[in-house]
Length: 200
Image (tube, rainbow, N blue to C red; front, top):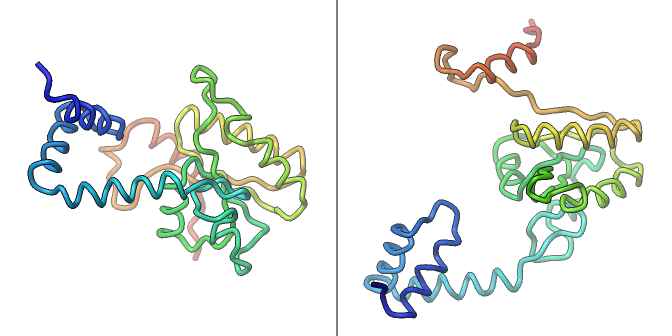
């Protein structure tokens, strides 16, 4: 037995969120209806405005309310460095956690032929145009260390190599504060491959 059509529709719509299954969606729906209708109205209004007003930056493809996002428009950024990331969330993490002052290109995914995601879906034609402008000296490949992320990084590194542009890959391995006995074999093997000399 279901609830009323409106409640069922609300529960079904909440299930589109990542990590939200039927029980969580039901709990969220009941919370909004029983305890926080005003919060639900604000949520609905903010969602409607964001879905209508947020698009993609024409330079880097991140989410933006403007045709060119604030990072791309900032003349103080280093235009010779371009960091390649998979999602807009990755841009936020790099900005908050590092001193990187270059620009970004957001793939909105990674190569996955089985899912129908190829170079066109990732905007690699647009990336090629940027590389051909001659402004970029270094591509920093910051895709995730998954099979698809590594394949994507390799594909883009080949694009850079053909244009004589240096490409670097983020190091992967032992996290700060991590203990060797708790690492998986792949992470430890990567850490050994990416080891470096200690500086005096």
